Length: 362
Image (tube, rainbow, N blue to C red):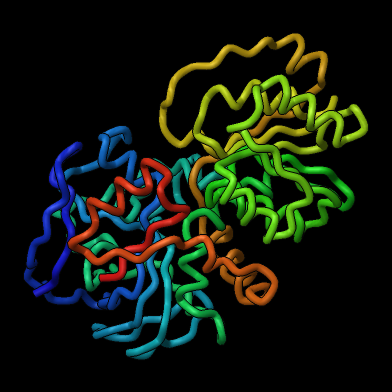
């Protein structure tokens, strides 16, 4: 039997159930869960704010564990044969078709209509396909990545979902050597965007966020300047960014807040002919008014949005952690570990910003 935390419907407390262990298909495997992340997406799931979720579900889309029993040969994305006990993670996205217009013409697999996601768009009827359980069923063809030598699972889960999401945002931003970057938001996506901006050559990184404890961590991660949203108004923050950038504004601004009101503010922080990347509007939090003359045309501003991740973002993020784990202590993003029985507490703590990051340890 497998023990799992199950979200039966929106706004319903998670319940713990014992589930029978199904037989493995050819090419499938069991992953014995070490850690599973609790992120903002899980809060959205709890409130029923994501479309296409087949409740009841087992949440938990970013996970790390040890390979258990397998049915036949199973390989990682590098082609290496996996053995029981190997410490691995896997891309939560599965069943991308690589055969539709979005996959083949637009080259945007995150918009593939057949795309499924562990812990989000796989329901309990589909199987044990979420990380808030002591075992996870790895379907045939799941993209498995073995953790690099020396990369502790605690470090990996500290990067978690935020790092590949930030990787996608920084990739779209096209940051150049010597650029100044503003990151709006000091949660996991925002802090990871600040880390990656430094690695790709930003000469100055400014984080706009709060509370103060998160901004202290931003400083630890090498950020040059912080602006506390709890102590400033929007116009003061825009003015502060301009003062820090010679009056011009930032070359690149990355939004990682989830607050629609941050969008117009962030566009005003960008310099003329700069770039603005929206990464934090994962669910519909409402509309925002933007003056297209002042914030788009006259500024000659490039605006981009990102949605989700693909294997390249996930895989390369793990390589980054393997290389730079001594410079950036990703594990410091984890505030607390929770048992399965504490899953409701974990969601509530994340929703109310009592923790930087919560991790389920089944």
